[in-house]
Image (cartoon, rainbow, N blue to C red):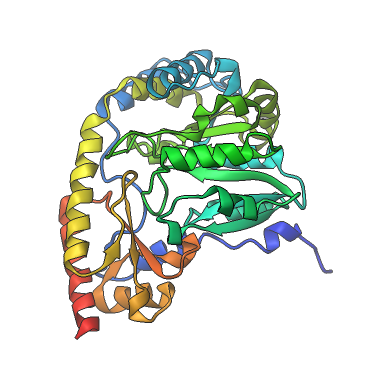
Length: 380
């Protein structure tokens, strides 16, 4: 008997980022600079709130979209910190940003629709779009210092375009879209029936200049979907909590996917999320700023090409001059240099590799020492 599975699932591969990370972890003696998971632990006041909730037996079904007090806290936080005004009934507390992205794209995409993904990008987006039966349209930005021009965007749009995904600060480049870039994107999209999905999960980790989210263009409110997460700024990756904000008619449909996928976020973690929103993340930002400066200078001193990131905690390093595709290069560096980073092919840019600098100072020094020895050997 021949059984047929969903065609979109069958043509979607497991994450290459995860797969290569597992390869690094299974390599004896390897130093890993792969995953974007802060080495910091969740702050005590956040854990204490969860413990108190457990002691109070807050272990029953919560409201599907989140407790009212957390929805209000997110609403207040976004208005206070980011100038984005969404009422509690325009917010859903999700199982991390990943579920927020899946529920949002599943809500807006129909088979045959196209979703523009500026690359380099976290290609989870491409997988989700494919699982929705839509088509990912990859739009390279390497030649424009990772910015987007109006002309480039116009050329990518067709009569099938349903959405564009905007990630700033970007994973894997650490690039932040300039106000000029955002204005050009807005000028192109303002009168078109195209959604802008704003993945803002790294917006708290910004080191240079002023930051703007495309979510600020509220004249497009009916086509904006904004995603955020507790994972990165609060060292809460394992808690799996995020949120999505959208105009009420869109949010009301996103909750359908959310309800049937996960029902709700666990009850006792929600008080901890309120505590997180009240906490001061500036010490964390300063830690990553110092690590960024150290790693960037080390890479430049090695003669490697890299654009200094303005946010997030990644370096996207050009390796084209070594004459190898990124998977070959990174595999060789892992085997011979015992240091692991992620091949750029998994971000849609095969001439690059991504290094995560959210590891400890000691791990960063050791990993960079190994990269330097490996690079020196290639140059010999």
